[in-house]
Length: 105
Length: 105
Image (tube, rainbow over all chains, first blue to last red; front, top):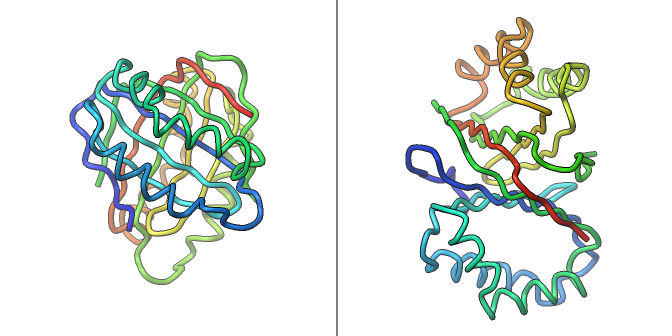
């Protein structure tokens, strides 16, 4: 179950990953779970939120841009990215953004 | 149906709204549709993406911080925000972020 991430006081970074899935699982579910587990162990990881209806949106939060670069270059993650482009996503967009302020109830 | 938003070359802004809904509709669906329609007419609006499972994530994209401030202060939107705090959301978090780079397939 995805919760609202408990992130520190800004500034920090958000990676917004929006995607359309192809038909069928093709190993996606298992890899998606593994990537959340693996991301959670990376330096600078702050949290993740995810939901899918017509589009899937996964937002991961990071302390700084260096931690995002390291995660993007992680070997197991690079293999997941390759399979994502090949098998799992018909379309996706990744946006790297700096959170400047936040508020909540 | 929500699609992946066609946004211009960065920089631009993303407002990440993550929420938990209360039970029952209580007028939420109609107001949510109206807010997307109304946001789309605001100066600086670039697009919106939305999905809900355990959490709801709505990301709206804006040209600049001024357009976000104007949208937050819109009277009809302020009434929706009030009802959101009162009736529709048990919890939410809003993060205002500056998109620095993006890439896609």
